[in-house]
Amino acid sequence: MKQIILAAAMLAGALYSAHAQRIKGSDTMLPLSQREAESYMKANPQQTVTVTGGGSGVGISALVEGTTDMAQSSRKIKFDEKQRLQASGKAVKEVVAAFDALAIIVHPSNEVQNLTREQLEGIFTGKIRNWKEVGGSDLKIVPYARETSSGTYEFFKESVLKNKSYMNGIMNMPATGAIIQSVSQTAGAIGYVGLAYLGRSVKAIHVSYDGGKNFVEPSAANAKSKVYPISRPLFYYYAAQSESAVTPFISYVLSEAGQKIIANVGFIPVG
Image (tube, rainbow, N blue to C red; front, side, top):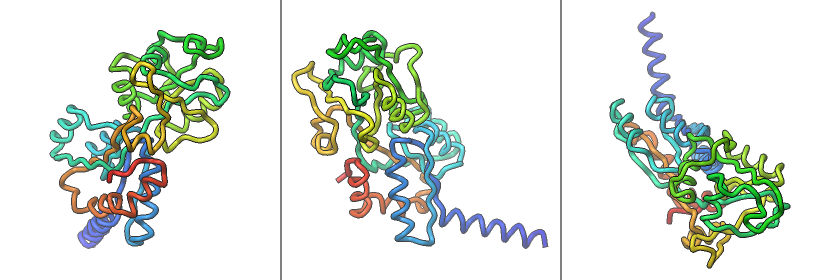
């Protein structure tokens, strides 16, 4: 009897794993993956896809530990993360699902419209501490960043800060929504979020990467044409051993229907 129960449990587990997928990681990709999962499950009622955030690093760690089938990441996988996967007997596969622009946001009452990359570097490294130093009011600057496990935190450091360290004591927020809320409620605040998170509660800054000659608005069109400088690919990572299980969902994301969802959510399609 015990053997029959054990066999039944193993069969149930196999059936579950064949029809259920877990995606974990990047908060930037959360709305994208959630919408894709909803649409995919409507088209495939026998399938279940669960999506949770936590940050790109958290998702990749979960992939190493075997507690997720796919990691969603707003940055490229690191060398040491690849090594950890290899050590656990997993060969990692990478898929670019979409592209994103990173928007710099301030409180709607802030009169500053434009900032150069150098000014942003100064603000987030602590060299510029008052808005009057960049053409604004005499008001203390309150920078918000993502937590260190976030791919967005890493990408911003690489692209905008040119790998310089964030200022000591910067407020690291656990999720993109927390940055939106904090910036919308703090007059001197500044932060950064994925393009899909922009709304009326915050104001997006136009950014220049050519020393102030041209300031570009963060928009899907400007990111797609590569005019907006703070853009990046968004990834799914999975173990090669799970390829047959995850391929149907990934194929859906990359299909015409899936890429249309990506555009509707506010990201930039791959094609």
